[in-house]
Image: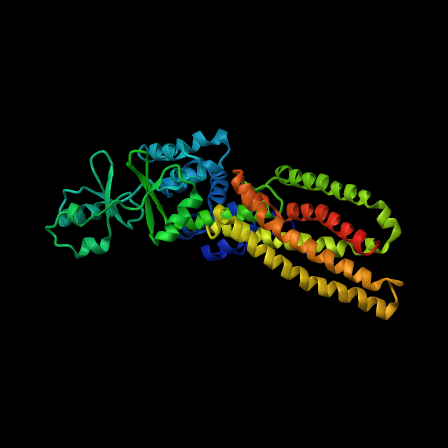
Length: 442
């Protein structure tokens, strides 16, 4: 590795595609230098390709005049995402850079939580009146397309109070006679989401309905904006990242990895790690209950890692599968009995496979090296039965814990693999030494 500083190495990037690929590896100073060196078109393409966190970080180091230009390049919902990434004390300054028409829309979006439909929606959408003719509607849509409406997927039919009456697809609109009235061709009672609907639920609705966009409405049915497939893709990526971090035993990071300060990284990780450490102390306590058994057969200690880790591994597998199935809507709380039945069968099967391998390990070592004195059969039986019990229990507990957390109102992803492994360590020791006491030391 070169000893040259990251902040002084030459930047040999000349277009937006290359810049996007290298962006994550650059320092803040290098990013600014690169961005300002790009042609305007390439700079715009690069800026629009960045996520909200990187856009805010870039805007924050630009001169005020340039901040205004780049912030106004974004749609209102994207501006709201950028402002939410900024420190509280900087948000008013960013709002002051917006024009008089965009600022109220952004302020309205900022009133919502970031993870609900209202916080994700685009307030710009195509609309027409039910009394319009098809010809009038098409002419009016042309005006909207050349104005502020960023994307026209469907045309929403509203009255003078913005009450959503129906929706018209462009296919139906183009196929209808020009003198026909919109109220006669619109689809009434369209699929909608409430402004407070969780973003994950919105993603599932869009996926299940195969729609490109879905309108967001308030309690009275007034349309507030739309959520598109593009928004959902971002939601799915963010939720998957958050779940992945939680499954790894880390609180979800609010910023990208390199933008997370070491102090914040410590805070996000130390809590779970400390909890797991304290929980692991129970392992020592559990072993203390079997002190006499250990003294009688020290060989049992040699197989603790083999047996206990198998339970933790199987539990981690089951927890990961169930957490993901819950996130995708493949498993619901009412399916707990079926999940339990399936995992017991799978756990027993896995346990039997490992039991055979464990038993062969003991008998093979004794045959080759005479390792276990005069009780290899009992030791092999102890290890095999313990593996069946520990793996079955690990699989069952790993699959049920996410469901229990969901039932209690917590995020199932908190059933992290390290947490499940720690739980299986403690209970696995009790299973292991109980079987050893009954079989090996009887």
